[in-house]
Amino acid sequence: MKKKYILSISILLVLSLVLAACGSTQLSMLTGGTGGTYYPLGGEIAGIISDETDLDVTPSSSSASADNIAALQENEADIAFTQTDVMANAVEGTNSFEGNPVDNVLAIGSLYPETIQIVTTADSGITSVEDLAGKRVSVGAPGSGTYVNAQQILEIHGLDIEADIEPQSLDFDESTDGLQDGNIDAAFITAGTPTGSVEGLAATTDITIVPIAQDKIDALVADYPYYAADTIPAGTYGLESEVTTVAVLAMLAVTDSLSEDEVYEMTKAIYENADKITHAKGALITKESALDGIGIDFHPGAEKYFKEEGLLD
Image 1 (tube, rainbow, N blue to C red):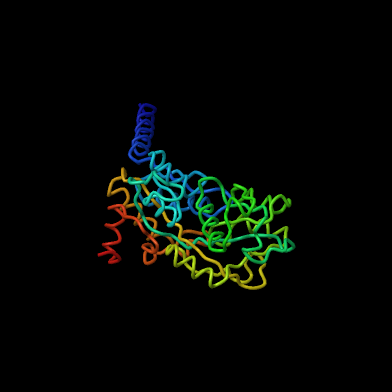
Image 2: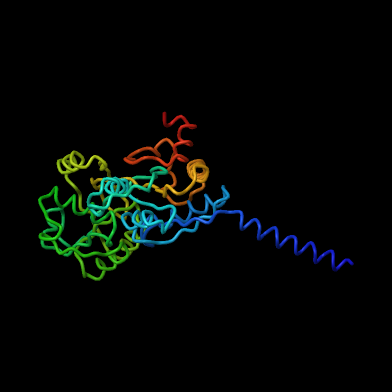
């Protein structure tokens, strides 16, 4: 009799675990390449959502921004990291989304500044953007926001991305490997600083970050308002002095097929538990800055949270 009782209890426990698992909604999150910021940060954010809500979020690596939005558009993912500028392009149907505007993707909120870093080796002789003319330059993985950033920055300096440089479509890890091996001369990397792959390169190779002159920053911001002036502090990657450049913002986007309650809980979990994020960029994720740079509509669930917090009318 005692054995039957124990067996019955065991069966009930197993059933309860199965039912609990079935009760959680499974969602997928696209991050970015393993050498960037999206991937490790996305893992932590997915963990927070899974811990704080009934949603079970699984993160995975990807080619980042533009490809992530395309996946959301095709309902191949539920949540994704992207850049605010690429998201604006997607809604407007410009650049990577020329003739194919996205109308089913909405914002959760922005996260932190993503710095455009033009990385080269200390002995390359490249000290300005104009020096990139004729050089082998990584302009980011296909479908990435980095490509658009490279195109726009080169354009402001009178350079054409196809005609005036030798463009290489590499992800962050491939870019830093290429710099170390001497296969490329410079690389555009759009990511929060310090970026893991660049730190790895700096550990074995003396590097510099090519500055963008203030007049070019002003011209870029005038043409593309989603850019902002930014500075890479001295000491980053062993740099002796600070470097002036520009940044866009990282953000989270979702498909409009997610319910208001799901996205409300998700948004609340992220912005009220950002202090649990161990990644350096966690310190920059706040509800007060979550509306910065967002040029598209918020999901009703995110909108509800920000209204409750007095951040939206």
